[in-house]
Length: 84
Image (tube, helix red, strand yellow):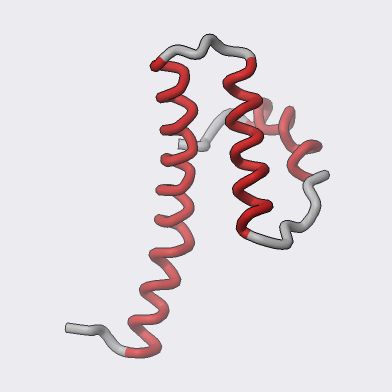
């Protein structure tokens, strides 16, 4: 998924560190959408490129869900009891 070589990650680190704090979900969505547009600006507007861009965002959402949201749900089950 988002696991690229450390050397390749270093290229993006300055830009990531310079991001301001996000005040809202809308601001986060704006930045994600802008990154997707930047990715597509260097590519032909064909299905495979559009698909790659869309699925990259979806795979990131899946990974975030797996690492954070699912963990939080498990904590809520422990705190409040399971529904079964």
